[in-house]
Image 1 (cartoon, rainbow, N blue to C red):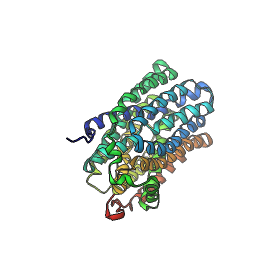
Image 2 (tube, rainbow, N blue to C red):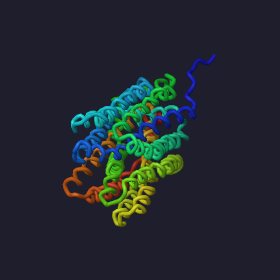
Image 3 (cartoon, helix red, strand yellow):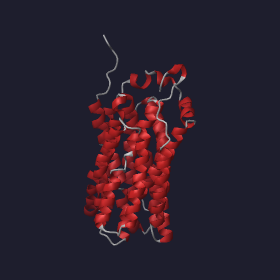
Length: 405
């Protein structure tokens, strides 16, 4: 009689993982809608709001390293359930704090900590260990598409809640909705053998870190992911204010953010599918180059609803398309035993870029009265990321005894 634990069905993994990401990323992408209501209510500068979201992204990146270690060792479902509760608490705190410091502690520290345990790094670790290698990038693309669907579906809902109930009650309802992630986490519960029964798991955390950080391709992937974070968070948080600054209706920004989510559904799925057949480093270089071209075209076009919608649709196809490709590259090079942890380090670089993109966008606007310099920097960084991803070597590492990663 075979007493080995049964693997998690792929359909169950995708359904539960995608539902969790829809919720957590859908809420996260909408924070820009709260910038003006909160700053106007409290009489704050945009930089006050921006620094809280910047702290959120930095904390998310730092905490993601440790949540990945815990998930790899003790199981992702425990991490997801516990951090979903922290997410709900952070949203409630965001609603009822009235000083920039407390806002940074709730919207910044608490929600950043919560996102580390409920989003891609932890979810992708489970997928990497339980989905066959020939379907891994595709599965990651499906889950990233779910995050995009969350943005598309929840953005209009969040805007409606703010306009109908007020920004505080909207956050209360989102906090209640976040509790749904707790029962969903049990669908991600792994058999013990999948986390401790492979030869790869005999590699210690220290050995895995030394191997990764001395490998040039890992360093290049981190550098590229920094740019991804800078671009998406600057655009996601500041485009509502950029649109209003140019005299356009605030609803234009809401629809633009929803369009980004809609088109990213197809973009991330396509990127994950292509990564099963084409060199991943070439896909990443192409994505970053296309972003630089798209931002340049947007800056040259006269501000109008049409130009905003076209830009949103174009950027949407590229928005999170780097996520499944980068994660699949890490899994292919290093294996899956420490995937959540290594993904956490990669994601820390992303969140460092997010921190700088959100904060610098607000600071440059308050200092110069314009977002132009931030847009120019986003273009230059896109070109840099296209160059650094091109030489990435995706060949699986061979360890002692000739065993591939």
